Length: 224
Ligand SMILES: [Fe+2]
Ligand SMILES: [Fe+2]
View 1 (tube, rainbow, N blue to C red):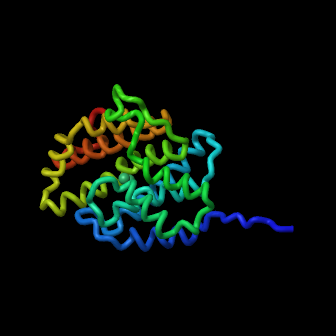
View 2 (view 1 turned 120 degrees about the horizontal axis):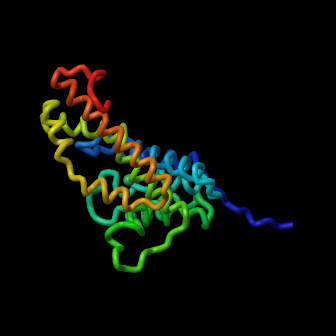
View 3 (view 1 turned 90 degrees about the horizontal axis):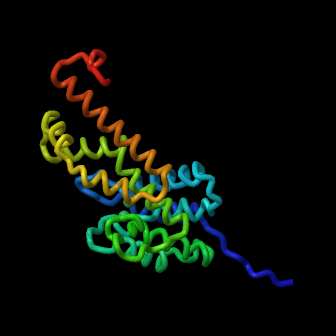
């Protein structure tokens, strides 16, 4: 009896490859290895969204696609980092996946910023993607808000030589369009609720910080 040997995903070696590609790359002014940490968080958020939505998906594919979505961007600032990432995966580690897994992961990497609900497709035919692509798109957006947004904002403030009041002013004047487009581009209402909560927490933090800078007792501030 001859059984065709079906390859299955070698997650351990995929993680090791991604670590080597992303963890030690200088991403000034972001932290060294930013794509690695952002990839890990995005993969975990995507899994949490899938669980929250009760979606039956291949978790290994979703995790690998989320983790590697920006691999083509590590140390690279040119266009089409999704297509570049796909080419790297297909040429360097194709044997770590079954054929269908490789296609599914590459589809996530290639399409992670082609958001059907974005302004880009307004009035045009929207692309249709399987759930894992849509989940990673939302997870990628979510990771740019919340605690990590604060961490990156402070790192950026330091590289720009900003004082706390400069940082507060920068926050007050930041582009509201960016937030609106991030919200509009999401695919799932669960992601929208999470993003709204993250944005509200960032604003609450800056509002309290401003009160503190003025010497106010924050426990007495109205609305806080
Ligand atoms: Fe990206
Ligand atoms: Fe990303």
